Length: 74
Ligand SMILES: [Zn+2]
Image (cartoon, rainbow, N blue to C red; front, side, top):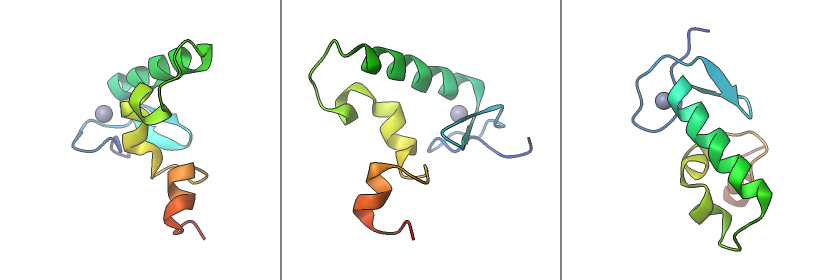
């Protein structure tokens, strides 16, 4: 994969993807651990509070809620 990590401000080469978004190892790991905690459902805080890293890339995920709210997904 020759793409760069899509996390805002990151210049690392992408090694993995999360929801089709290219990410470097470190950011993929951050987002994965957020997701694991989130899906355990231990907290009732809003998703963007529990998953700050994910929220930063969410607008680049084709099917994300944030994209759909913005209405630019067509
Ligand atoms: Zn990165």
